[in-house]
Image (cartoon, rainbow, N blue to C red):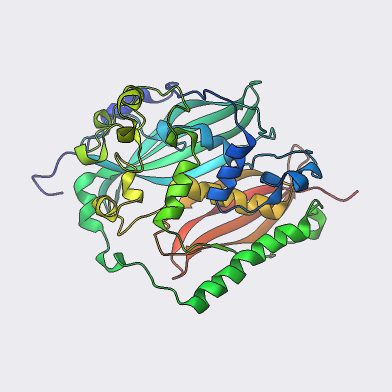
Length: 389
């Protein structure tokens, strides 16, 4: 580190570890439109989540939210407990998520609360120089107190100066796709949707899955600023007046002036709500504007880490069908979804087991890449499937 570089001090995090932090409760219950908006934004064309006629014939008899849905209510995409304590002159990127799912599902009329507890952190040297890998836990419960899922989120925090210094200038321009390439993307995108149509309300049997099997490819994109904005708008906190917002001082966390601002500020929302919208001001605006993306190390507009976590869950749940369930997954974020790129998901069955609770599980190794073969995300997951007889 240069002699004139600011000190990388993470010691303020210590006072927050293990302590429940303030949250931002929902003001109204979820509606079916909230569920539809979410799956639309996440590119998850599973009829049971948006078509009332198909859902009426399902095991639930009505529209049901996907397993990825709980984070919709959170004011920080689940990363709030992994972003506590001041690290002066720092930026933040999502580093990954681990999810445990416990069974209860979400329907219109439900409300969700989130108990958030900072977990731990470690400092390592990376391409950004000294880097803090900070983790925090989110416990999502419904109005009956039932635990729906637990999310352990990882944030990557590093000195602001390192972001602009490491940006890849060769990635400034978006790829240009021919009409023929776009037609091919359409066919590959629909092939995965057709897989869900073919399964319909039937079971995907544990007995019929073998180690070494490949899950069908899922492709979506090309991503655009419009698609990123659609993702952003599908979270409740991105809409004025939806949460009883907690007080949040982004500058006190060490964010630089240009990346702090009034995002999620409950006082400013009542005065000038335009300033509270993270799509335009604050630490999230790098997702929409290349100028700010480059300041934190991204070459152009880029997608949300929380969306990538949802893509993983939705990919696996869509394959499992309505009688299956993702019970656990890890997702390590290795690279962003950049504007102009496409995302391609694949997975391989690597194990098959019955756990101590008698659940019939398969384990998969999943990978998310862009059109260049660059790994965006990878990890493992366990999926419960029904057994014949």
